[in-house]
Image 1 (tube, rainbow over the protein chains, first blue to last red):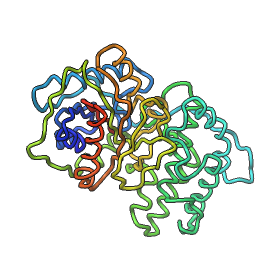
Image 2 (tube, helix red, strand yellow):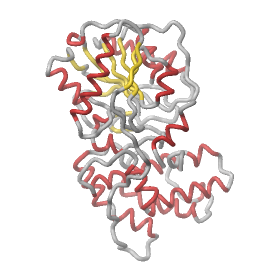
Image 3 (cartoon, each protein chain N blue to C red):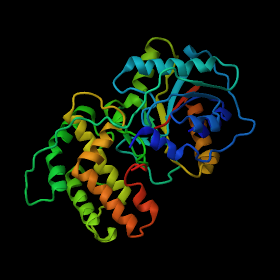
Image 4 (cartoon, rainbow over the protein chains, first blue to last red):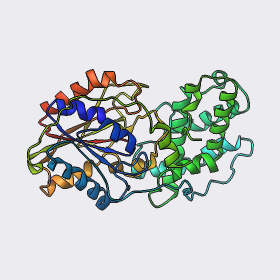
Length: 226
Length: 148
């Protein structure tokens, strides 16, 4: 992103770059850089908090008053301690003949639809897998987790992209099951630690790694620290 | 998993060095037209999704709010943006600042690129300058860059 700042300045635009990674924004040294120690994915800090977002923007725009390159740090940090998980009650089993992960995905559809109705589809399903087809995609990964080679399991696209749709479907459903903005990563932890689908994807990823599948194919199926 | 663990994975990633970097002095902010440029791979549903290693940009209509992220990295929290687009793309906040006279105007259009690029040469030499020229042609003075 700071690369764009340098390029745009050369085109005669004044730029301000927000950065969440201190080392990166320091190393690339954009003409005006504001390091905001916020979780990745939240450069304005707090969803649903216009006053906080305006405080970030006020600091950012104040950098335009500098006579030369400037790097500053926003006064307030937001720290994720790695423990918060969204409080979402998972639906009870409906179809005892279905794989639990598949049954779970079907059961979350009403919550997903409520969230889409309220927020729109910004990060949910639909990149390569429509919401209606998410249970089928989850089922494909159950086969991979059980040892089926990934190319023979019926994954409906590039594994990482399909996993993004599944995670997006679940995290969007979580918005439909709660009444407030989740803290950073709380939805992702809920997905990978507490849901059948999230655990299935991690199991499938491990199976692919153990089978010698090329790293870029399996690595991006989940956050890299998992 | 925790945010600091995810950040640690990319903290030492190679970054380009710019020698003799340009520095543009803007007009007073209350006379400036401000655009957003994000590397969150945003696009409208009717636009082409971002491909892996996609170095092109998408033009975002500031009068719409149907922004979708096409980012390929799993290494950021997406629920903040799902809940409130302004967490990543503060277009409503800019509209408020323009209404209050803090900034001169909000650009009619904004740009989105894909972050998570390992080879930045195309952005540096091709799509970056092209996007900058396009913004200048739209009368933009100031760009606020936001990552994910």
